Amino acid sequence: RRRIGLDLTGFAYVQLASANFFSALGVVPFLGRDFLPDEDQYSLRSPPVILSYACWQNRFGADPNVVGKTFLLRPPYVEPLSGTVVGVAPAGFSGLEKSAPDFWLPAVTEAQFKKSVQVDFRLVGRLAAGVTREQATAELNVVTHHIAEKYKGAIIPGYENEGIFPSDLKVELRYAALGQWGAFKSARTLQRA
Figure 1 (cartoon, rainbow, N blue to C red):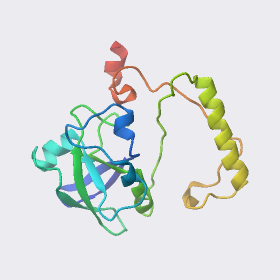
Figure 2 (figure 1 turned 90 degrees about the vertical axis):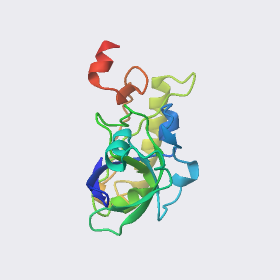
Figure 3 (figure 1 turned 60 degrees about the vertical axis):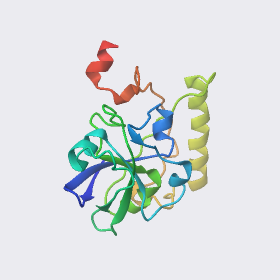
Figure 4 (figure 1 turned 90 degrees about the horizontal axis):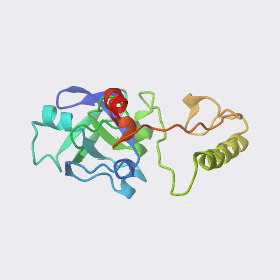
């Protein structure tokens, strides 16, 4: 989550997400739609925005006609972006955090934000049918090994601030959690499951 300027009321917390973030988690927007595949392929001057339910209520007055509205995003030290609301997440959905960000933007906007703030990524996925955690770990370790071999201790282009890619990096797959939306529910809810 990153704090960025929001023309409406001040600072906002943002989470960058892949185009299939909502659909992979089985999340259907309360209003509008989720990201389209091509919206995460190239950077758009006016990126699509999916508001959290709380942001929609508190900053947009629960306006049922919010989809299609634009607002100005002002990350520090970089050119502002004009975001267009395409959807509102359902109540209770908080994404990858204990509390929901104010909104989600496509991960491709990372290039814009990393000029001004640290951007962290975490990977969340589902195992394909019939694939074990051990098989997935082995396949991902092959990928990390190939990346390490390709860059041989050099800095990966575009990630200069991240340092070198460790040659001995190993993948650790963990269960996200139990229940609908898994790790995206509160610890109290999960303890009762």
